[in-house]
Image (cartoon, rainbow, N blue to C red; front, side):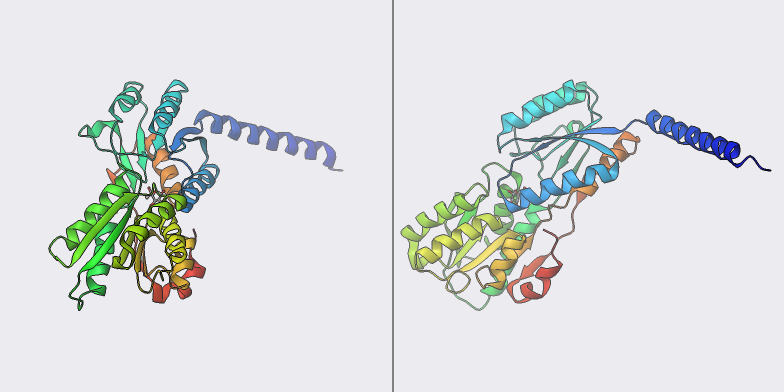
Length: 322
Ligand code: GZL
């Protein structure tokens, strides 16, 4: 008679040894630890970006350390310094502003920890300070906003008076969404930027700035050019409280293409929304693993984006992921 019990036990022990061996092997190629410094939680875009980074880590087998800088550069610098002290394998961050990063990135370089930029770029000549930037082309986004204005007003003699709600002062998206607009309209004198002020990418900031613009310029305003949906939504509140009709007598150009932006297009209050994808988590995890495996990465891992028009918003909105 086959000693089923004995054989069964032997099979069980063999299986357990195999599992422990594989764990042993798994332990040999250790988990990658990624230290990530996030700008803050200023907008719906940022919330979606944080969610994308946090949810992508376990799926990729990356041990994520995450710090929210409340939109302060000194907090990002502190977080990066702490990741260096913890000897993480890779450091990544979304720089709140473009300048002032060389010293801390020199420290990361000295500690031989590779750095990945996500979402926003920095202003430096030293290309050794970071390996790659994963994110959008904000200059092209600004051009797309400008081209929509050019097309929309091609038969209009003007003047077309624009008020601009800028993003965080000194940030790459604010600098480049402005520069891209100027590139397109600079040769067409009918377009005039009559006022430009930062709303810091927040709904409250956009509302506050637009309240002042509405008081000062009133119905002289033809266009609101808002660097993100949160400020556009704040501006819409301010315009409606001032008796204006956003999307109708005042055209609204916005950026990000978040659910809130789409809803405002469906409601007829934003006329065009230039996409800027926050869903960078999976690319960040893959880049971190590639780096740890010694692979070389392109200097810029660019996200593909498009422009959404009000007429198409209702049809497309159900497909949107953020
Ligand atoms: C753009 C990102 C900007 C978004 C804002 O990539 O840095 O910051 O446009 C966010 O909504 O606050």
